[in-house]
Amino acid sequence: MSTPEETAQQLRQHVEQLVAADRKDLLLRAIGPSLLEELRVEAAKARLSRLLITSDCRFVLVDYDNREVELQPVHKAVYLLFLAHPEGIEFKRLADYRDELTRYYMKTARLMDKAKILESIDHLVDPLDNAINEKCSRIKRAFSDLMDDYAATYYIISGHTQKHIAGSSRIWYERLKVITLPRNLVQNAFISE
Image (spheres, rainbow, N blue to C red):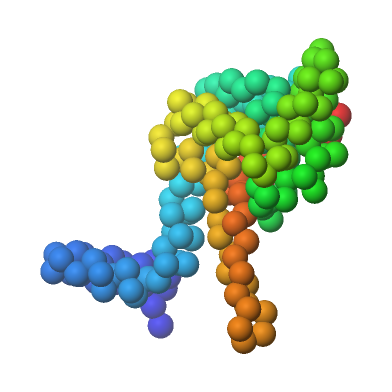
């Protein structure tokens, strides 16, 4: 019986043989897409930073020399909403989260006029308005400015499609938007205040 370390060494030798034979296709087939994604997450964990959301709603990347992610209150509110819903949210269903989004926005923009906040929320939850996409693009740019693109994919609001089958003839897709950052890397002093 081999130890896990011996098995890993044997696996490494087999991987090197497949790579030398230019057969990465076989390697990928042997690993499988779900395990490959788990390995990507494991590899990325070493490069991911804890995200501290301070009591005054600053977003700080603790392990990147406490660099602050510069976002406007509306972007912070959108981010907090998606952070609170690791299961994901469909953009077309944002109106279902109007009250929660409004609470976050009111907390992040304490000095802003309530009428302006509510008007902005109307744009965000309107499925025919592009406001939510614009906010997500700005969030993506803010994180991408501070880290490499691969690490940034864990912090941004990105798409995840789930296929559903009901009975034998009905298929539909949920186009969820999620933040894939492992929640154990998030310290949220702002919400717990």
